[in-house]
Image (cartoon, rainbow, N blue to C red; front, top):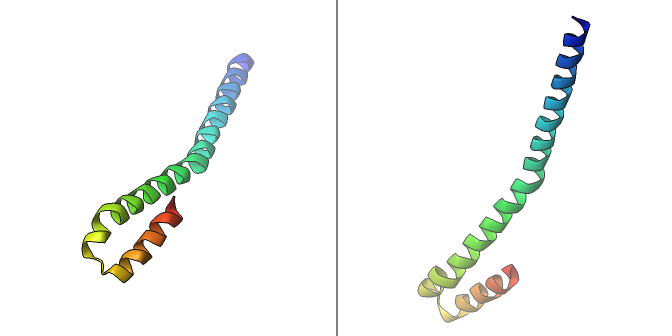
Length: 70
């Protein structure tokens, strides 16, 4: 009986540790992926879509934004 309780407490501690480790990993790494994806999407938009709709002056602004993203 006591042995079973000790085993269940050990299993609970181990599971909570791994769950906490997974949550910390998600909190640390997911924002990096989101920022990288957003930068990539913005760069793609500035490379392909923006020059088609820009005047020469605004095109230079777009180029400066694009250079800032790299």
